[in-house]
Image (cartoon, rainbow, N blue to C red; front, top):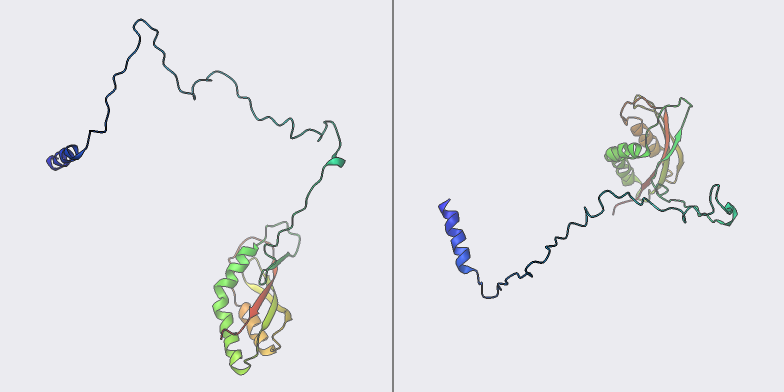
Length: 193
């Protein structure tokens, strides 16, 4: 405790007070004192004005005018349309929720270390081997891949395609109470060197 007092005393000794000014407060004698209150509490007891939306809804609904004079703009997103994006389709009409495209992509990303070595081995025999492979994958509620087939291929190597399909059939998704999930997955293969 004494060390702290010594440090504070040193700070007081080092403080230059020449720039500080002393001002005496003055007020008129016999004048009413006035204190300004906080703006926050100044309107206590009054109601809220709410949101004024009269002009924004003018001409719509049951109001005056018609919808024929109003323009709308359609927006289309390219998110998920890129190369490698899964095209998701739901089979059956069980009414159950389905798996998400994100979950599907995560499982593929997690297992890409098992797919690309197959391509690297095939590349040793065929250095010109490259292109896009599109697979259709069916995932059961148990998380097992029940079907995987080649939709299109630019590889031109049936043996490599067969090995990739066999490897994808070993992928394991989380078991969930969902509908059967069918998705397409495009995989690009290019030599790294």
